[in-house]
Amino acid sequence: GIARLGIHAGRNLTPLRDALDAVGIWDMLWLPVSVLLVLAVHEAGHLFGGYLRGMRFLLYIVGPFQLTRTTSGIRFSWVFNLGTFGGLAAAAPDPDRPIRPQLLSLIAGGPLASLALALFGISLLFMADGRVAAHGLFIGFVSALIFLATVVPSRAGGFMSDGMQFIDVLRGGDAVLERQQIMTVMAQSMAGIRPRDWDADWLEQAAHSDSADPLRRVAVRQLAMMAAEDRGDTGSADTHAEWLAEHTDDYPMRFRQSLTLELCLHGLVRGKQN
Image 1 (cartoon, rainbow, N blue to C red):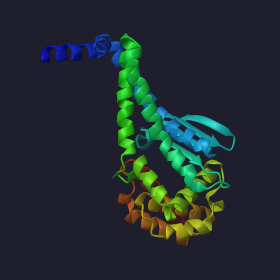
Image 2 (spheres, rainbow, N blue to C red; image 1 turned 180 degrees about the horizontal axis):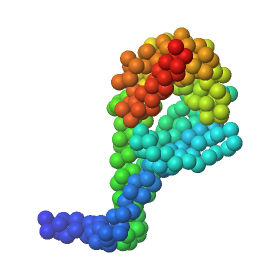
Image 3 (cartoon, rainbow, N blue to C red; image 1 turned 30 degrees about the vertical axis):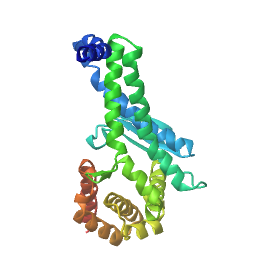
Image 4 (cartoon, rainbow, N blue to C red; image 1 turned 90 degrees about the horizontal axis):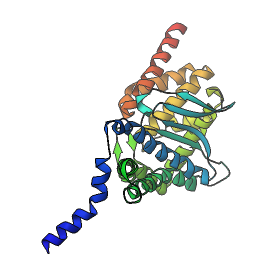
């Protein structure tokens, strides 16, 4: 019985052995491209989930590739920021629809897309031969890891996983309103609206509120500082800059460089004015 079980197991592993035997040195060079494909599908899933609920595309970054909605249409550009190299997607909510279903669909779209790609890639091991099966297996395995890493509720480096964000939005309350307003300001910024014309009342109110999420607290303060500077409100800008300097560690490590640069520019401008 043990011998028959071993033979049966060996037959089941035949597609895997055949796929691995077909892999050569040149195939290894395609692995980074496969990883980018996995990330691209995950971020596209977020955007598609938002689109199904009426959200408007704002930003799509995968590796060094970036698509941004501007006042003159969608534009492609290169980006070499390690903070966004793993991928980033953003969409603006439809103000005429309930915000919570839009955000839930946007958040869930990424993990669901990764799960679908994982199942498809692994299925190629049994539907195809040789290199196609091998690459499909690799893509499916990496996509499965991305699905697990994003769907499990967790916090790391100032970021919440997709699963944690989903729970956060489900709970409702201030978290939903904060996300809606931040995304609205982002949409105004990418549409070419100057910071001084953003919703100053909300920014000031949100900046001094006690948000439960450190990342949102820092993001709102940074937006408020930019708006105050553009309005010529040096007092408010200084207040926000001082707060940000004291709470830099609350910001994710990958984005602290941009925040530090913003604070340095503020200091230079204030130095010239004085």
